[in-house]
Image 1 (cartoon, rainbow, N blue to C red):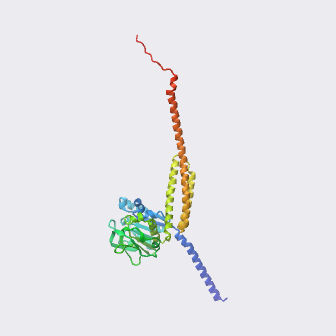
Image 2: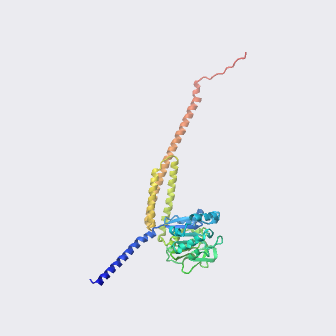
Image 3: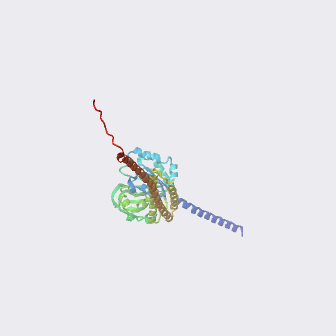
Length: 404
């Protein structure tokens, strides 16, 4: 073999090894990116009074979303001071910490007046330069709180405010981009009508995923990648706009979760029905655990022992953590199988807890029976002594001293 041939062979070998290394590296890195929780910070009407209407209440049921809720609407909290205090407590102390600690920023009709100028700058910069996702729900501008127009945040949003602001009516959804994973997995066109939309105009270069049936064709969902990050706008408002979605659409929770997934680029499950059942299993797990803890609390109030129950709860927790790891990896079928098995174990645990409670109550009933029986016997003895045994004694007669 000549020197040139050896050199070519060496070069080919090095190229082959380099490609192999890159393939192995990508094969290792890709699952890690998909298996990490989406660290989310949420601003605006973050309150539980909406119940199922509130997107924040919905998304925090997903084990893949680690949500930090920051209530920051003065009109809901009673004062601007309380809203600003929440912002100071939860807002990261620096831009670097915002980028380091979070993957997604969610805003639902957030009031601009409680955001410092540097915080607004951080949000925009964290999207373009820090690679974060920005999910914008509801208004860019509204009549009841200061507009975001003119701030750097609106520069990273994929749409701008339309002159009509908020409009009310009955608006159906029209899918615009059928190939987008967010639109493909759910049948958005069969959703109940929206009651309200915040009118917006898509910017050049953005992707309109869904429109509304408003005569002017205002978009409902707009998305784009900008800089290193991405932003998504959902133009209806909470809770009024999505009233019928929450009440009549079975996939409303999944829709809210998938909006967050799409914003940060997390893969959206193809089987919405399976995913819905799995999310329900995770939610019901906490409810069943709460039932067991209530039973244990009842038992301990009466001095009962619940050591075995605590051991079983810990074991259930370890199994759930294992199921969450499988869930985060995207293997939803296996995660569902594990959660079903955990549900059976929890139901058995609930029965054990009820038996322990009944055992504790048995001793309570036995103690009460003994106390009642002893009291009854004591009363009977006293009564017998006073009313029956007294006949054994002569009555004492009285005498009078005669007067002299």
